[in-house]
Image 1 (cartoon, rainbow, N blue to C red):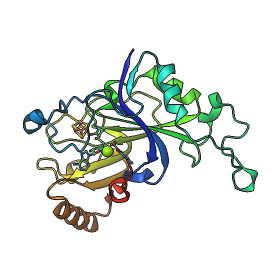
Image 2: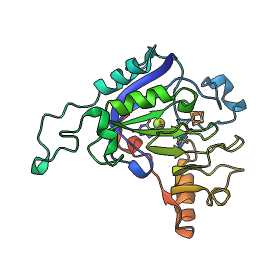
Image 3: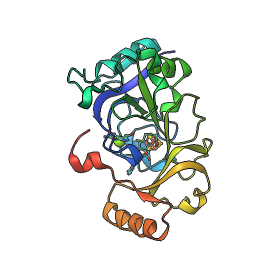
Image 4: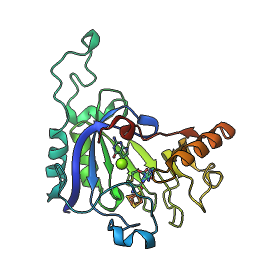
Length: 236
Ligand SMILES: C[S@@+](CC[C@H](N)C(=O)[O-])C[C@H]1O[C@@H](n2cnc3c(N)ncnc32)[C@H](O)[C@@H]1O
Ligand SMILES: Nc1nc2[nH]cc(C(=O)O)c2c(=O)[nH]1
Ligand code: SF4
Ligand SMILES: [Mg+2]
């Protein structure tokens, strides 16, 4: 399996229930709901995408022939931690990388990779999940929910899109870009997720979308507000 990757970068998770956490982002090339070309946007199933996922020319991007090669490239970006943690505790001290996933999967301080795209479930497979776990990473995924998630994902974020079939109806967090004509939060509220977020649609109507999302959350407390904090802070 060859993996096609737009970019790999270290940043803070900007969105959802893990906002603020340090993570390596691996952005796969390609999506099943839009070609990524501006000439195709108006006819795409998903028309509001804020991301360039075309090609392999971003920082750290490229084609990786094996899961081991891609896992190594991702691991290289995790900051080497030579500063002792408080109280002499290191979350991973004495834990061989191969056994690190026996710890609480999302424990703070653990290595974290976020697979996104494009649509990561077009490429993420068992071999890559195994290779990341072997290196001590917890695995988060940002998906549009049109494809089934493989087992072993530690944090699964599903962001459904109006007009696209929702196949993956369970996960950790459901993060709905809001508003989307034809896809009401009430149609998703009974699905099997631990957290429910409204994320205001970025674009020309961002201010109105933010106000509408806040109003909806205040009236429907099952839902919380997810801000794209990386855009507020100016980080990738
Ligand atoms: C670029 S997508 C890639 C992952 C996957 N294809 C998906 O759609 O979930 C990453 C996240 O950004 C969200 N997103 C994309 N465009 C957005 C926009 N204009 N405003 C707010 N969120 C957006 C998506 O819904 C998704 O949660
Ligand atoms: N900082 C940061 N957080 C993010 N959370 C989801 C993102 C994505 O594009 O999938 C994203 C992103 O692009 N940057
Ligand atoms: S599904 Fe995700 S990556 Fe694909 S076009 Fe929509 S927001 Fe962008
Ligand atoms: Mg993004």
